[in-house]
Length: 497
Image (cartoon, rainbow, N blue to C red; front, side, top):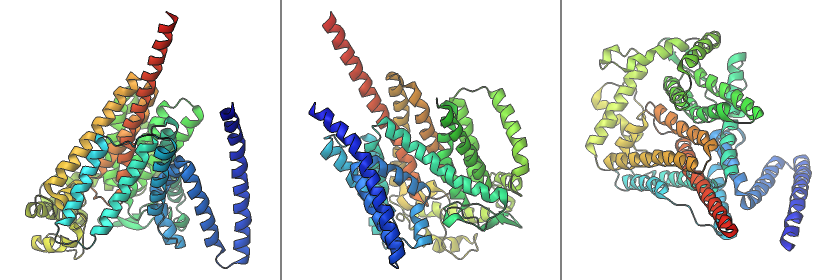
């Protein structure tokens, strides 16, 4: 009786407290902005304190904020536009402590740390060793802090995703974040107005499209259009599966709008790797759904005809340059970017041969590129360059141990996804399997795009891995609930007998 009354009191008290806090923020904000020269900073501080308190009590709120901040690159946007120091690391630290306190102290639940997390940690240990034995160790502490932050994000997501509601809301937060930045980019392209960058959330610099033709390419909250396409690929299949399988017509509509915005923006980036990954992921997802190929082909033809008038100038010509990657003869590679990438690939290979065990050290490839490229004489750009492929980068910077640990991690993650699907079917939760498939193909799309891009903005990769890893957590929780429910039903039947 006392407990039920306490719960009723808590349900009444929480909205009242939120209302009072909201009024306090408004009043404090009005005063500080009106009567002090640093009122906006004080207001930001008040909001930060409120958010911090909320995260400690309700860690899932912090999780949604974190997903939004990571995907929209909000930390960098705030720093560049408003001069606010980086918020990602403090937010991750606060959320990590809040999650552990809520899980272990308040609810007395064990910390989730399975084979999957061990495999991810194993790769992190190899990264640390590659730096420890590298010739260049200047950025060692910074690299390891960044990796620790990314691993903490994965652990935060894993601990919180035993709850179905939190797990689903996390995916919806990602779709909403992607749809939001994609909407801004589509507005720029369709109106031709690139003067408004929406406080850094919709950048659109001029880049080379094909040799002799330059044009605007949307980059969203990032500075590179190829990476923008890559991060949109994370949300693309998740939104697609919500469109295909969600039971709510309203949510289907919202997912459909986000899906179209995301797909269109990927095309507007002119990213060849992004376009290739989009096509492959679409085919794999449709095959997984066992959809009619004839109807699919007809739909694709109609969409293509509709899209042709709005495709940016030079898009088709740029996509056709994908064929230049295939020949082995360098003379057939007419674009300067391909010559540069060939040099970058050969340099990565040579670094691997020179230091095969642990490589040259994580993030040391750019520092050593010129020394290697000058011997090749293929690239006339006298500047530090990246490997332009995550897999070549892993091999060059972490050696055979890095390749093995990275490959093992991916195998374990994908094996966990398949087990998650089996567990959900065993738990009679077939409705959650499409959610798992969305996270699975998000990682597949990212890995395909990574063939052509190095691991810059690594936090997006680890966020995608965390989404994939979370599928095993929710599936295990659902299976346990199902087995417990069946056990209780069996006990009741035995009592009746």
